[in-house]
Length: 406
Image 1 (cartoon, rainbow, N blue to C red):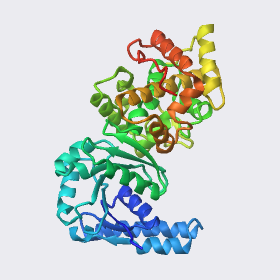
Image 2: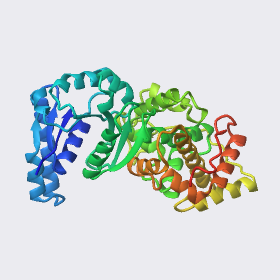
Image 3: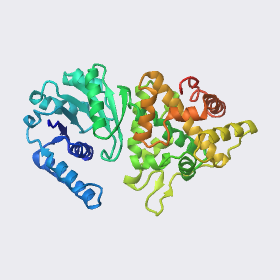
Image 4: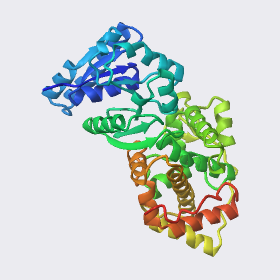
């Protein structure tokens, strides 16, 4: 039986994770890094992780030994000559990625697919820089690659449709859920997820809820695994803020995605989340304590507004909560719906792909369009109209969501 081979450029956390996935699904892996010892160190790390899975009974001895036997160090470009697919997982700089591909290109099969694991760069521009745009595709894994189920398969403007289909097929073979996207800023997940954080920081600024209150509402009422504040701390406040500004600028500065001054001021002070022990929370205490002071304001809703918020929660929440919790949930989630709708209208991806991406890429309890159907477009539009009247007319004056959830 013919065994396919994948070349992986970059033995860091992501490259090694992708290598582990490929080896465990029957592919030969040629791993290449700046030098042989670095690549060898990466493979040793993969083997240690496979050893631990074997010890814990999560892997059979046969699968373990087979996967280990498939891991090879690519000591020179010629080692990649049999690869059907080459994936780069190196620093997020287009010039560095292009140079890495150009170095190995003369050694590759003429039909070898060139895949980039970029989360933020243009697949189209990378293909142009390499001079092989038809062979280049985005294959965006999520960290940690062996555990996270999603792969975003991103088509550049000139990517060959057969190449896109083959990469989607390979990702499925490797046990992944595939969401296809066009070459839009942030692809699907980083495009659609922005309001989860931005709206939370806006609530903090307005004083309606504190850090712990927002996170608790989104976990308990919304069914999210982590609230937006704790998730921003985990990702890294600097990374989260940079992604927000990048997507906002590339999309022409839509008001709904305006970067948050409170969040950016936290980053400016060097409070980057868990990695600096200070962000939305102070991690020097156990459990972590909220680290953002809020000028608390009482949420005052009219009877009509209260009924709207509570109806939204009754249709969309896992378990409706207090009036404030329902408001926090409804406000954040309806903005995600609005952004998902905008992504659909921009042609970023189809409904099903957006739902798949958000469920498996960031563990949303439901995809935005599935969720929107449960709430109903009339309630969603009424909630956005309420926010426009009570908070910021320009920010929430989005196109009606009617007709997009079906």
